[in-house]
Structures are given as structure tokens and as C-alpha cells.
Length: 213
Ligand SMILES: Nc1ncnc2c1ncn2[C@@H]1O[C@H](COP(=O)(O)OP(=O)(O)OP(=O)(O)O)[C@@H](O)[C@H]1O
Image 1 (cartoon, rainbow, N blue to C red):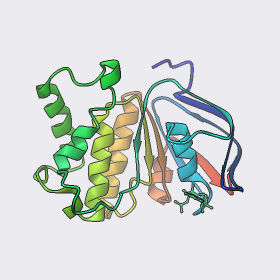
Image 2: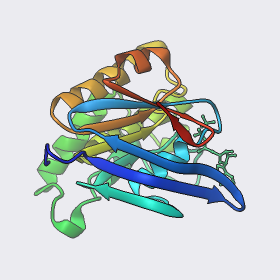
Image 3: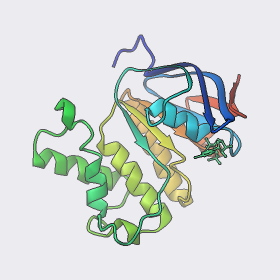
């Protein structure tokens, strides 16, 4: 983590689906040690922007510099019953990300500790052996947040992590993000929630594919 450079620096990002422009020369910095909320109306381009920032999509134009690996928490997916992964499996997948670089857990015991801690933080302990498909939408979302935490990445990007959560779980998710930022990592969170926006250290507003200053 280099405090001089932002965690993510992106400039002049443009993106289109087919012929229709979704992002138009967007420039954003994501700072270290803070929660940055990304907000704006439906269709503004928030998911597209976080996918570009996380490296899931490539921009048509513009430059993105990431100081570290990014953990991306996607919106809760619908999963078929034939996908027999458990809650523990889904969270454990979060620890696989850095195997190429030898940065993952050093032992099975360490992996189990990371996974157990992440599950406990989203208050899903007791559900470890449950099939992921059998969870409610909000429970799946909490498990995906735990997967993001288990990545132990320096940059955490979440696409509407509070969608479908009850009020108590939303507050818990907000606390978790603040805790992550307070240990110095960069947190970028797409949200429509007023309390999330009020609690964020920085707010980026996107409207029709451009940043409102
Ligand atoms: N796979 C796709 N194919 C074609 N168009 C798409 C696709 N995904 C998104 N779009 C379009 O790109 C625009 C931006 O979508 P995006 O999902 O980034 O918005 P958003 O701000 O995240 O919206 P929401 O708040 O509803 O989640 C929308 O007009 C949307 O219809």
C-alpha cells in the first residue's frame, strides 16, 4: 500500500454496450483508508464503472491504474440447485485469488481461520454446511460479502452489497466496511442507501455516465 498514490486511479474512461455509450470520459480516484460511496440513478453506469475499476471489463478509452489486487463483491446471483456448493465453499473461494502469486493463506489452518472469521463477521455462523442455492437473497448477499473479506485484498469493491439486506444486516455491512477502511484498505461501494452515503468518507455521484462534481 503506497499512501502517495491512490488505490485506483482512473482517467478518461469510456464504455459502450453495442453502439450505446454508457460511460463518457469518467475520471475517478479511489483513496486508501476510506469508504467511497458510488451512487446515482438506475442505469447511470455504476455497475459498469466498478467492473472496469475491478478489471472485469476493459474500457474502450482511458487508463486505469490499480496499486493492488481488487476483491470484487458482485450483486447476489441466482444459482441453480445443481450447483451444490456450501456457504463455506463460497467463502473459501475468496481465499483462492492470490495462489498464483503465492499470497494466499500459508496453511489449511490459516485458510480455515480466515474463512471462519469472514463468516462470523457477516453473522452467518451456523450456516457453513448449507447449500448456497438454499439461502435467501439477503443471506446469499452476506455470504458474498464474506467471500470478499476472505480475499484479504487491499482494495475492496462492492456492487450494492446492501441490496436485499434487512435493516440490521445493512447496518452490520456498513460497520464492516468502516472497519476495513480503518485498517487502511480502500473500499468502494455502490449504494442507493442514504445511511450508507451519509456514513461514507467520500461520495462519487454518477449520472448518465458522467461524474457530477
Ligand atoms: N449487458 C448489457 N448489455 C447491454 N446494455 C447493458 C448491459 N449492462 C448494462 N447495460 C446498460 O448500460 C447502462 C448502465 O448500466 P449499469 O448496470 O452500469 O447501471 P447502474 O447505474 O449500475 O444501474 P442500477 O442502479 O440499476 O444497478 C444501462 O443503460 C444498461 O441498460
